[in-house]
Length: 259
Ligand SMILES: NC(=O)c1ccc[n+]([C@@H]2O[C@H](COP(=O)([O-])OP(=O)(O)OC[C@H]3O[C@@H](n4cnc5c(N)ncnc54)[C@H](OP(=O)(O)O)[C@@H]3O)[C@@H](O)[C@H]2O)c1
Image (cartoon, rainbow, N blue to C red; front, side, top):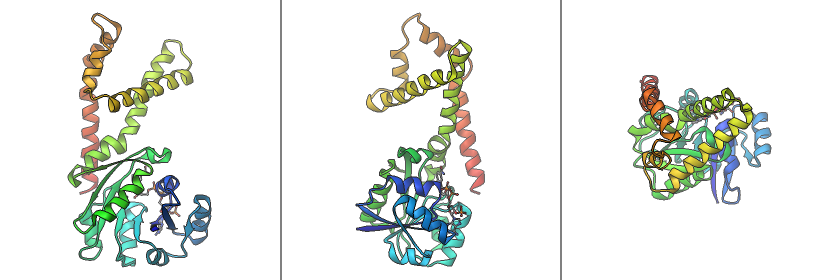
């Protein structure tokens, strides 16, 4: 059985570990504090290592699930001669390579917050030293908590905006629409549930049909009808351009943070 060792067992590592099939993967975790690690390991039903050194020795693949600013410390204190997977936001393969040895197999992964309900949309990229076998195992780990998209590393900033930050924008859209329901007399909780269900089913419709989203807009816009009145109103208020500007602002902020 493949052993996956997670250094750092906070929110994201715990979300991933909860989704993993414990009969397929043996899982070790090591945190900053031994007692806390043991408690977390008990809750998650995995092995708590006494130290990072123990975890590294006993694992086939090491996942760095600490905050980005902790990664350099871990890699300078421990020589890891095994494939390393980093989920740290903004840390590139080149950054990781500079902190490890020559020809170190490295995988960069970006899950999103929906991992907490096992529905992450995850981006992944590897360097040239990761074999297909290892890469497939890493992909299987993240497929346990959602979907995995192999990306060019240059697209990670864009991915971070449209999958990492976008849940916040989608929540704003849902809240705005449900608030409109309240304005017109509906209770907020009923309105929010109705909008959230409609957003979920509309997203499913896009994934299940081969149609372009604009074709689906046309399909629900009858001539002279109610929907087209709303579509035109959204466009008069620059809906599409506003959303594109928000994503561009997110990407630009991400780029300045990674300089
Ligand atoms: N949360 C997200 O939605 C999300 C999405 C994509 C990527 N990520 C990435 O995932 C990584 C983890 O994020 P998170 O949200 O899970 O953060 P988190 O909940 O704060 O987890 C980080 C964990 O690392 C532990 N830690 C700190 N120093 C350590 C050390 N020297 N050795 C071992 N463990 C140490 C922390 O323990 P203490 O609490 O004791 O300090 C904490 O349990 C980050 O790099 C982040 O960029 C997160």
